[in-house]
Image (cartoon, rainbow, N blue to C red):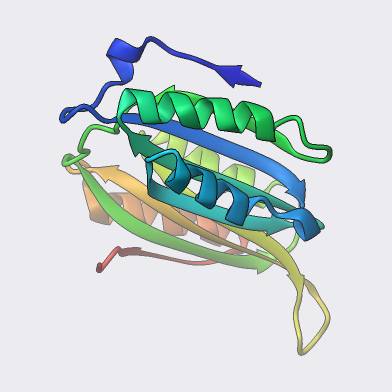
Length: 190
């Protein structure tokens, strides 16, 4: 499936256009190398990449950029690739994200006994407080020592610079105490 947006909107300064590509496939048939090769062969550059293996499948998310005609060639190549069996591929033109200089990056780590709704409560807290979720990784696992079901999440958030950090941290830790979560919230140091 392909969705094209107005090229005048997606054109970046310097004549570059961006294309967001997402695939889902069995991990044994990961399209990563094929996608990276097609991006290079069409004259585009790879601006950002995310690969995650979830269960027995792999999700590949790529952000390619190049001149409008190179991106058009890439779109054609992706349309052909999307016809392959067991590959779900979506691509569309997008825009560069504006600098978010008013957001302070913080890393939140949560560990808890595995139970339904833990992540929903944490996300709801940040959403209710006007904090953006920039990246999120979570997983369930068995504790090596006891075999207990555990939950872990790492979340990069963007806190508006006008927010009072100490109050926000206190409110978050209060939520964690109420939910019996072990958590930290520290500034991103890189």
